Image 1: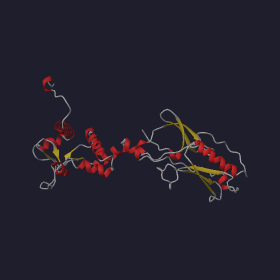
Image 2: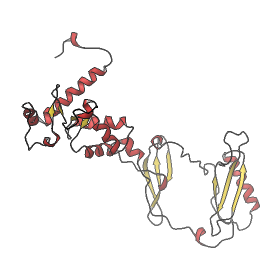
Image 3: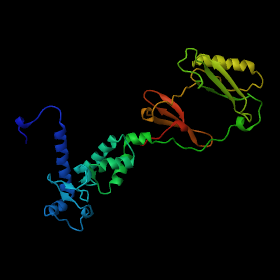
Image 4: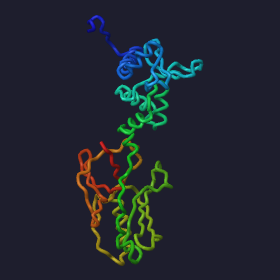
Length: 291
């Protein structure tokens, strides 16, 4: 037990952190390499030892280090003779996690190179892959969208119809227009969903509000009164502006509440719950993340 007079106060120093790390490394080495410790005290090691090929030796702090032929190399002691860590130790896993964070969640090669600059882990590549596979940030960044069979083409896409009988639309910023300009215009792009996709209607609006869109859409309908077809009326909220400029790590997380299967029993739309609201998203915009 530490006496009250021996207890230090204040933030930890780098010397204290290094001393604590050496203590726990020595503790784990004595736990997993007990036979090697006994043999290395006599400067020898058994041929059957798993560390035999690493030419281990004990340094002045009674830590097992990797041997080799780099004794006279102009490198630090940790680079020439890294500390040998047991693969199955939880301390080793924590050290690999720390080095993985140092390289900004790099891949297996960069993380392993960072680890081997100070430590040597038998079969270390397997452990590094396991740590990266369980890293939440890496799993979130490397997540891929759900894959589903493409739905059958609608009748409007495969049956011959007059131009502009059935239209799709897009509402986006004109890439050729400066965003900082006060007189910035935004185009509404109508494209034909029929066998003649070259029929396009393009119109500029003053801003990207719902009212501006509805007014422009009504002007388009006023000029195209032929071939009317019954479709659900547009309402406020039908126009969505998707913002994909954020980094994937900043995307919001949601939980799927309900699946919405189609007539062919394939699910291409899901109802999911984010922080405080329910959303419907197609399968192309969902990235599964296993927690």
